Image (tube, rainbow, N blue to C red; front, side, top):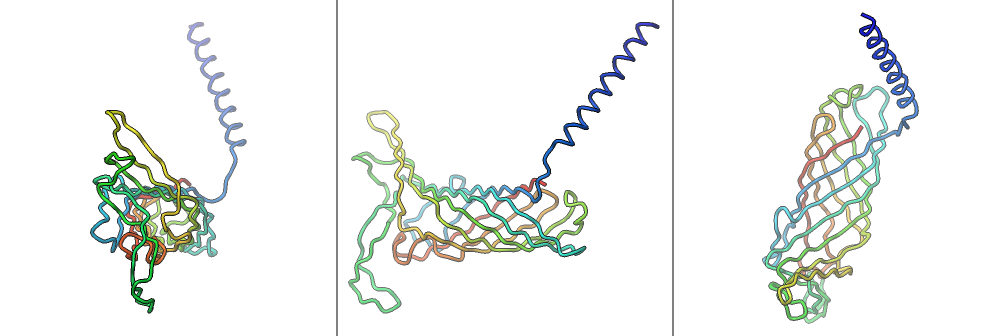
Length: 250
């Protein structure tokens, strides 16, 4: 009996100590307003021409955003400005690479035929120091500002609320580079080349999200062209589409 009472006393003492520690921990935990959002998606280039051949899963996007919700009184609608990073990968098949060339073109805006324009064309299979590239990728990173309007069926309980969001994003290109892999005498060699590749420095597009709680599906369409006018592969105006999932940390 005495042993049982000693054990019970020890358990009660430990429980009280743990409860006090948990209370102190919760009290010291910082309360950060707003939410953090992570997007995971796959990319698709639209109107990219027959030289643009990309891998499906290798062409992907990871977005990390912080958003601050502004609620309209007791309304179920909110405005959510934010800021974050968008990191895109474009994996080309057959070792294709963006190569700087000079083309003779005639623009629809009236520029005469024979006008010389610098273009970055996809050549496949490409050679690096005389060796055939077997893997290649274009990487683009943007600083972005998402602005969205969101509807929640249960704004008082966001974790269990059905939500629909629609908005736009504007972005500034931070950097871009290509990654190429090839074999030389049986040894795998990787090369990373950092340059603009004729990409637009600014971009803007629209997106939507539909989900429940912290999980949703999203779609982003880039209204601006990926490359500067006439500088992309075959001089085409390439737009992009990204589809994926979003995870929202409350």
